[in-house]
Image (cartoon, rainbow, N blue to C red):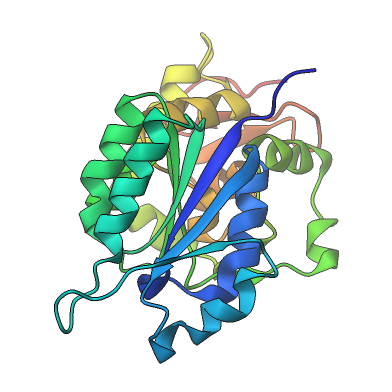
Amino acid sequence: MDRKPRVALLIDADNSPAAKIDLILNELSTFGETNIRRAYGNWKKNELKGWEEVLHEHAIRPMQQFDYTKGKNASDMAMVIDALELLYTDRPDAFGIVSSDADFTPLVMHLRAKGAAVYGFGAQKTPEPFVNACSRFLFLDKLRPIAASDATAGSRDDANEADEAGAVAAAPLRATPAQLKQDARLVQLLRNAVQAAADDEGWARVGAVGTQIANQASFDHRNYGYATLTKLLVATQLFDIADEGKSTVMVRDKRQARPARN
């Protein structure tokens, strides 16, 4: 029997919302078994009471870190030290880093350089260097649970894509087509990925497009409010979509002046 990938979850409790822990653990469960769970902070602070309530429920080990300087916590340094120790001793396949602090960017880059995937979780305000350094980053502050009716409403191709992407049952408010088109970085990323995965007629499988994106950027369609990559591509209004409702959805840049796929 194949061994499940092992994930180490390290939480900067001083800079992370305890209310989102279920979403975080659900997301990480799609990548492997989260058998190391630690939350760092000065547990004497009243601000961490929310975390104290969920530690036992989710088997998260509290790691005490006193504030050596008034007004500045030292949890980030403790997390870095433990992450490096885990990397070279337990050797997990992936790390979950929960924080909105850009100071973790060098750590993330080192972990990935040594072959470990890094899944980041933080607020919308998280600096881009930290977000871009992660294998995937999910913004937590705008996430809301998806109703059961929403989860079963999609077509079969969307369900298959969600399984492949490891979609968590949550989504932020949706960006409008106009907002998506104005995001130059997103538009370029999607168009380049479609082009790289396209056949001679300009069509590409959405699954292959997703793989292309994952290989070059920290990207998650849910950060734009769409449950699947297919839905995001449709919302941009920049691509033709074929074979919707089937197991393999195809996508093509509308700028391609070629006959539509039969």
